[in-house]
Image (cartoon, rainbow, N blue to C red; front, side, top):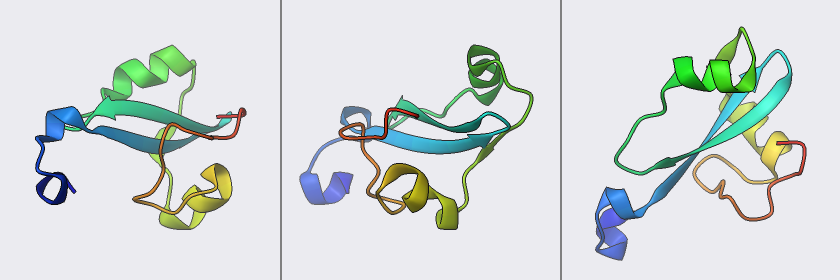
Length: 77
């Protein structure tokens, strides 16, 4: 995507969909960085945190993997 748009990864946002024992959560991360999953677990107050499978992302967010964005996400996320 960055090559197509002609920009650097730091100008993009990744929307990472996680599954926890409390449900789904979305982390917005600058494109050139990785999520700190230990810090995210603490911020969410959860014990279990794992990237959601492709099969679960679309039902949870309304968008398929690769197309999840911060706009119009369900309020429950």
